[in-house]
Image (cartoon, rainbow, N blue to C red):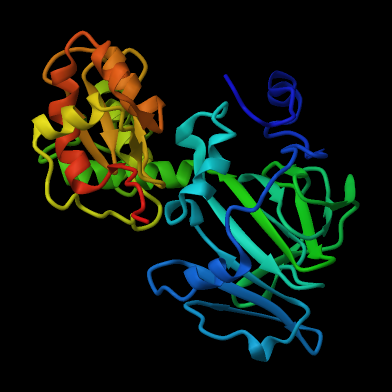
Length: 382
């Protein structure tokens, strides 16, 4: 698996992933920012893109949500602009996430990009997701502690901070440096000079989220389920008592739903393929016919999956895949076609031609291309 990261991936996964923070000096040698602070500010102008500003004023923390059209009143120090899911709007930012393909795609969340003036940051806090922070232009001072329980409090209605902590990492990052912060590790970062940072986040749903999502799936897809049945019971000596046998049957009713492998697979595939933010879908204009799609692939044009699109399949599945919260099925079994669609962010003609039944994949892919989930990169006219 190729990656430009200066990282021993197997050692990292064995000793740091989900466990200990790690500073990777020059983790991306020669890193160049894929966008400028002005371009980031332009994204924060859009009402459909999630953005925040955090600043300190007279020693007090302040925060607000975008869109934003001016920053003059904030001065030249102590403020930060954060924009979520920039990878969905900027293909070169999505390329940063591609460096971390050694982590399963369903764990990837988004790439948040922040710009901070000197002294700007969001304060000491603890996140419950893992993140790789790539330093872009400028320099930023980071302090990171080991996983621990600390008192947390609201520094502002939109900011949750933690109490002081002992730092295991206390370093100033320069362009190309990477900081890995596992969930549960307290951390804080403040810009030394005007600085851009790219936060590649990885989700980890908790049990409550999973149960809630599974219940929603049942309500949407199941018209009937088995009911509680106490036929043949003996007279009760205690009218107000909840017997253990009742709880056993309630647990059995619920467990039956989870033990259906097809139902469980469809729920998890649909849930994990849902986009976190609205996708920047641009339907093809004019729409492609199957013949036109084949012709472009034959001519060497590549199909690119839109940033933010989530596409997954289950191990052993050769016909079913999940995209944007929906379940799709190929007309015939072809595990190679499913893998090509979901494992790769780019599809080229020779890869399709090598499939057992290329037309089976193309017939499923055609409407997805026409909807904008995949697109051909058009050459700019001079």
